[in-house]
Length: 253
Ligand code: PGA
Image (cartoon, rainbow, N blue to C red; front, top):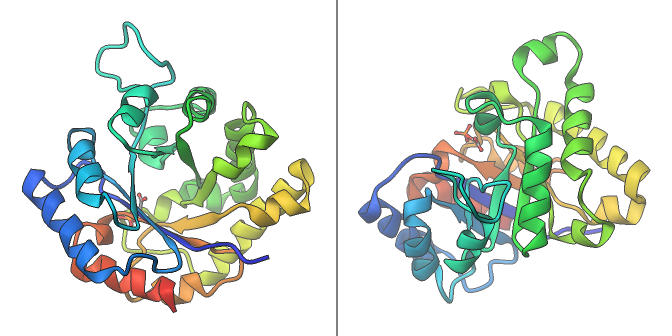
């Protein structure tokens, strides 16, 4: 089954107002109205509305990098899925390794966020990935399967069409050491086989699994050529149009 490719740029806590606007206009200038694959950017919260306006009428969709597990109330410093949707963004990253490892988010809280986001119509990208120690200890498959199972626990079968998965080995994020195509392919197969076992082969074959972790213009084509790698979640290289555009071009080929 052919799945539409998906390239997403996670800006993390980078850029300013002018930088965000400049980057989107540089991307718009290079992208046709329908490039044949999906493109999304994930700006910091303060620039979400700017990004939504700057992307209007283009093929670029906009998402937030996180959301609260609750929809409203006394949660100082949190941002709700409702607010994200209200600003016109349609996507959200959940379970990113920095949320898990820097901010201590557990599988339980990530599952609550999945339920909350999907419940109001946001399209999440659920990220999973092992640390270097876990890989060295032979626990990669156990870790990603636990994160997958817990993250999807509250998700109804009918909601799965709104979910994208991303395999992001923690040791590859921001390190310049990407997973090899073989390593990515192996974990993508593990994830897809688990989806087939839990939700049926047709559902598993319809879901997109992105790879993330030090994706660059140099390695994008070889990673995207792996069967089962349906796109990329790009951090550092998504901040600079001269790097992100060649990655988008690799997805187009
Ligand atoms: P990186 O980040 O491309 O800078 O390694 C990827 C990510 O965190 O999504």
